[in-house]
Image (tube, rainbow, N blue to C red; front, side, top):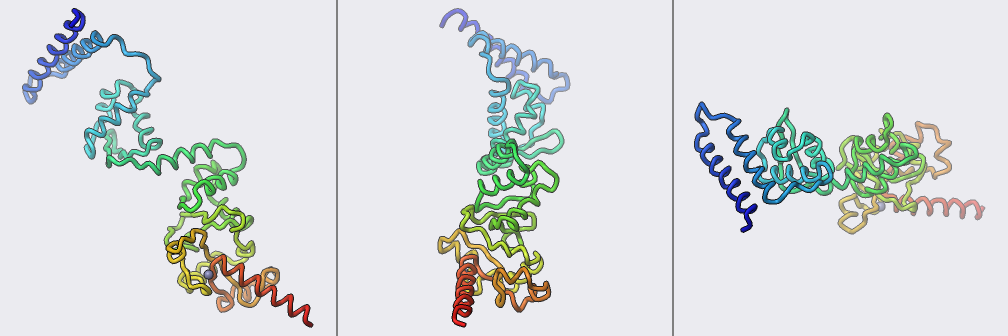
Length: 308
Ligand SMILES: [Zn+2]
């Protein structure tokens, strides 16, 4: 061992012995914090002598992982903010805790000035979603464009009103989902179409332009659609499938539409509301069967006209 190393080692060992002595006195009235600080300072100085000054790193970068390591050593324990400051060695530890939570997906609970890591399993999906939402939120364009981008990026997954509002960056931004559905026919489900969804949850079933819904679905008020689907138990009255059955069979593009039994598309616009929304004329079909039955019906009408 070189002279410097020997010197450093004995300083660290000295400080260690002081700490052991101090730990034995925990509970004594005359024990002060300053005595601990002195011993810790001496240990730190020994480490500097051993390794030299710490190389400059990006501010806070190392601190993030020190905080995480400390949380992982104490899962489910409440930890004071001051502890994290001591561990991280920086004043901006609170920002690092937030980063761990929202950007890296760690489940860290906050209560007053205390924090607790609730699980050693990181919620990686949450973290990925957060990064995606921030990337979309920074994009130029309209709120509706950004809502559309998020729905497309998360096709088949449930998004919340808060998610949509966040990327839209405008008041009531989440309402843009309805414009996409009603004006552009995007098959976006809400709790009205899909009993597994809660109010305020939305899911784009398919991003394929071929799967855009019948644009006349918007003629049916939301309440009417809800009543028809509920009456028919969210099941296509032609093929007998519901979402669960469709997914079991590998069909991830299943969604429901309201079908009018007596009028076809172009007649619907002209129907009085009472006739349009008469429950006995309406039935639940899956998109696929709705397309097929509508085409058949229109084919028959063409034949009838041609025939006479
Ligand atoms: Zn069907």
